Image 1 (cartoon, one colour):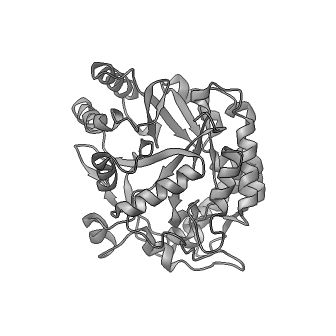
Image 2 (cartoon, rainbow, N blue to C red):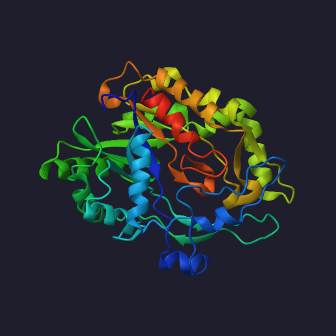
Length: 367
């Protein structure tokens, strides 16, 4: 860590392999590659479809792929992966096999932490002329203390692993939707108590927010850190909050769907908010690109004209805001390592090759 200018933790999607539920909902063999491969350009010079380079359309059940990803990340200065973790309540998990295998095998020997993707899954209806509502596939539930306890003991082995990422000697655990948890105080206090009872010094709870004004509120609710994504606020800075609300409603209801496009060079000017990111427990996010259209077509959020040079500029702006922090808190989240169906990845593709990884390496490691 001493050679790095920041502790970069990359969001990691463990989805790229078939599971029975996705077979049932979407068809045999469905993975995120299904949407990635069939994506179409929606306007002139729209970069779609996106084609992976070095690793191809990989299957994460292959340990060789996971080793190669860890090597690429490490070489680029990334400290570790934050694996998305799906616990729906009453012991129900999905997409757990990949991380379980990483934990059990001890490979790759690369740091990690867990991020609880605590939200329900829906089959989204992106066709405005179709009257059917979104279909609930699996509901996120919060059954109470017994389930919270079971959840803790399910992830305890991960917390105790020597590879687990710590902040102030406490394992980092991330919440995708912090406001969704009923009796949040009860959850936090229970897990902190169980952590101490099991030989840990506590847990460093991090809450995600897309709204800058939420940072102080979430810290006051008992979270130890806040990850400031900034995607929504950056877009509002460009088009204005009210206009974005109007356009959002048009996209939901109209047969004519105005595209939701932002120029990446403009977006990055608003992603860094120095007065917030300088706060010791506020962790900024770096975003290489974003294009949700493979999943949602014309209703997707799309950044255009991203390239490794602009990403490098964005990283540099962000790093300038964190250099006065305590070493353990110089955390920057990378959104994301491999969200291919959101156009939100740094893995090599046919257009840019290792360009985004090189941008990370240049800025994080300084060479």
